[in-house]
Every structure is written in C-alpha cells, then in structure tokens.
Length: 393
Image 1 (tube, rainbow, N blue to C red):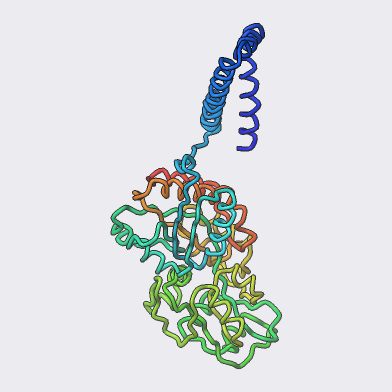
Image 2 (cartoon, rainbow, N blue to C red):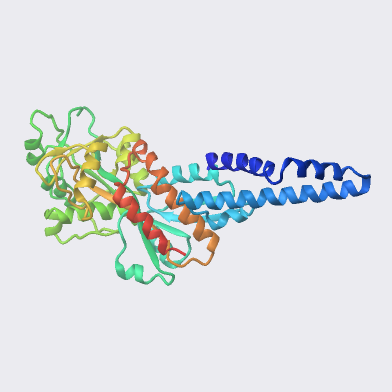
C-alpha cells in the first residue's frame, strides 16, 4: 500500500498541473485578483474544487490500484475512526501464535481490538456453538453434528499446524530416549509403569534408566491436544485402541496421572516433577527446555520433533489425515489447528475484520510460525483455507 499511496500523490499533483493550458491558468489567476471581495470568493471556490478533485482522484486511484493488484478493501476501513472489539476463545496449543498475530495485526489496525482466551479447544468449541464468542479455535475438527447445530453456520479454517511432543523429566539422562509406538501407547494406558521396564530398556541400549515409577501428566481441561494425541494412538492400532479408550476432547484415562490445565500447565508440571512424562505442544516444551523423546514413526524410524520432521509429516499427509503420517523422515504426531468462523455474522464490520485478519494470518502470519515452534501451512492448504473465507458474510 505504501508504494500505491506514494504513486497516488505524485499522480494527483501531475494531473492538477495538466487540468488546463498555461494561458487559461494564467487568465484565471489574473481574474482572481481583479478585485478584493470577488477574488476571495473565487479563491475559496477554487480551493474547494481542488480539494474535491484531490479526493476524487485519490479514491479512484486507490480503488483502481487495488483492483489491478487483486486486493479488496475491507468494509471496516470506511469507519476507521470507530473502535471495534472482537473476542475469541479455544486452543492453548496454538495460543502463542494467535497472540503474536493479534499483536502484529493491531499495530497496523489501531481501531481493532482482538481478545483471545486460551481455555482449551473443547471449551472454545462450546463457546462458539453457543454464540458467546466471535470465533473459536480448535486443534481437532468438531463432529459434523456439532457444527450443524450452529444456527449461523460454521466455517472451519485451517490456519497453522504443529507437533505434539512426549516431554519427560529424568535427571541424569542426557542421551536420546527412544520410545517405540507400542511402548508409548502402553505408558498412557498404564501397562508400563516404571522407567526401567524391559521394553523401554530394550529400545535404549546403554541408557541407565532409573527403577522409579513413571508419573504421567495429562490434561485436566477439555483439550484439542489430548484429542489429537489420542486420535494418533487409535490410528496406529495400539493397545490404546484395543482397550477401547477412543479419542476426544475429554478422555477417561486408564492410568493414575497428574492433571494440569493447558499446554503451559502440562509443560510446567513436567518441569518440576522428576520421573514424569506428558504430551505437550512442541513449542511449549522447547521454550521450557524440556527433554523430548524420539518416537518411532509409521516407517519404523525413530524421529525427534523439529521443523524438518514436522514439515515432512505435514507434506506426506497431503490432503489426508495427519493422525499417522507416512514417510521415513516424518515425525509421527502432528495436527492442523483451526479457527471457527460463523458463516453469517450479525455485525458486517466484525465479519470484514475477521476475514481480513485471517487472510493476513494465512499469508504474512505464516512467517511467525517456525520461530514459535509451529509449522507453516503448505501453499496449497493455505490457498484452500483462504477460499473458504468467501463463505463468511
């Protein structure tokens, strides 16, 4: 926009100097100063005409330039002097990225105030369905039945992706901890209860594992991270599925465990609890300096969480499920994260701002993802997500 505005001002000045021949402009100038009162009136009239002409030329250039560049001018720009407050709630998994988007977006949109409550995906979906927020956020899509219950219609928009790490606290263990698929599934079903279990030892030759109990840390709140993790356990055909535990925002865990709210709460609980292990969004674990297990993937390879492994999993999944990504280099537990928007909004200005913010997030906002531990969407996925915004009004 800065180059367009600069070009607009230059062209306005050029056009003004070309409105009449030199002789006519000179004649008009002499006429203006022929007598005092008449000249004042003519000067005022001429100034008013020039201002009107500038505004008309400016508006034409902005609209025309935007059309040439394929831009749309949000409806709210005409009422920029009016403050607008938007409220959303949901995922703790993606909350740091959303907060970064809000902070960056509001720097250029001072009249807009976007507030986001990181209360967990389950609670975010509930508030969205009840219409008590302007948008929701979740790491796993709600059922079609639940979305169909939204009176104003619901549009789920994938906006980012991330990895779920199995973070642990084992003082003195500095080497890589490898966990086969059946082993980490059995840790969370309660079948494996001590760190020196023969199956863990067999996968970690030379690692001196303690003969202490495994303290499992799980989510206390209704969680999209828990839903994505248990969906993975079901997809790999593990003992979790055999026990009929299923997947969802709220899980009836078969093992005794420590409870914590949100990804931040789980990460903090692991950090202060020796002998603990829990599932947590990769960025939270990384920021707290937690150790993270190297996990066996669908190809039988042990892969640590990281940008390259996460992107490999996302790309290998294509348009299919991310619950059990194929490929030698794929990290095994990844998930997309979604914003939930109303198809029909009661406030057209809010609808326009939300669409503009989400479009910004799908473009510029993706550049913030790697620095916070998230995975930028593949271009094809981002393009499909942006097209879905056409249904929001």
